[in-house]
Amino acid sequence: MLSNKRIAIAILNYNGLNLLKKFLPSVVKHSDKKLSTIYIIDNGSDDESNIYVKNKFPEIKIIQNDKNYGYAGGYNKGLSKIDYDYYVLLNNDVEVTEGWLNPMFELLESDESFATCQPKIKSYHDKKKFDYAGGSGGYLDFLGYPFCRGRIFDSIEEDYGQYDDKKEIFWSSGACFMIKSKVFKEVNGFDFDFFAHMEEIDLCWRLKNLKYKNFCQPKSLVYHAGGETLSDNNPRKTYLNFRNNLIMILKNENLFYALPKLFIRLILDAFASVIICIKKKNILHLISIIKAYLIFVLNIPKTLLRKRSGIFNHGKLKKEILPFKYFLLGKKRFSDL
Image 1 (cartoon, rainbow, N blue to C red):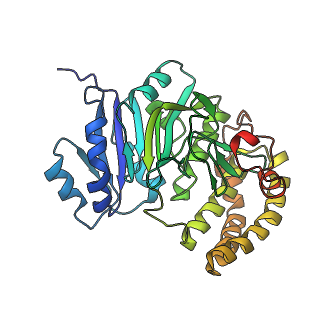
Image 2 (tube, rainbow, N blue to C red):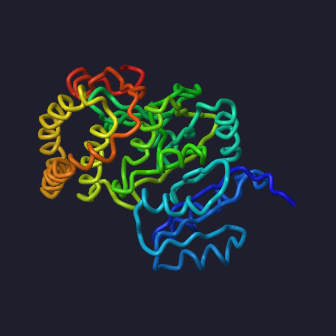
């Protein structure tokens, strides 16, 4: 008998036993079993994650990676073994709600050019507020700084329905988004070298350069705990965010604009590094930012020669320069921009 299931819900896991115990039950409870199958892509865990899943939820399929390849590599390897029309990439620290799956599915089904869709993502720890990593859809400012409907830098808004409209966005959040599998394969998935952080923004930018569209569908709602793998105070997270953001700009932006933007970013990021060190009271964050720039510079030939393919410049950035509006003009809500 042929299956009508169209969606693979893929949860990447690395030593996340406690997170699976806390959040996986909601995924099992609220996911349409006629439409979807749940997969755990395990990144070489050495805790009892897989034992727990096998015993508690035997209907869930497990794909075993031989080691921790990070978010980008882990998903690339795991999804290559899954053959469904749609993938939902879901963090293991996300609580889903009733009916979360179908609105995204129906939206992507409606148009061939629609590639990805994220739900409205709110904070698990403060359910009145948007989540830092995605809110109600992501954007990039003129210099490549990411922000969301509901979050600009560290200012997070309360949700009172102000961003409940279905909206084309620049990027869908890696915490939870649906993507057409054929589109994921067309662009060869995530950039393996990113390891973790901002790989979903890079993916969505490449898709926009190929004339695909990304959406937020707020009729779908999830809650994201966040910071469970790498906390904001971890200097490695700072390093990955800065390095990957710079590489992403050089990969995807028109070179005529990319080079002067990167020069401006160098100046602004120098100020940012001081602010981050003071705020987090740890000089290792400064060292991480310096390291990020050094590695970025060393990888410029590789980025230019191997990664700038299929550039059609349809992924236009917002015209706003976010640091100027945020720090000088005090614009701290998306609706104020």
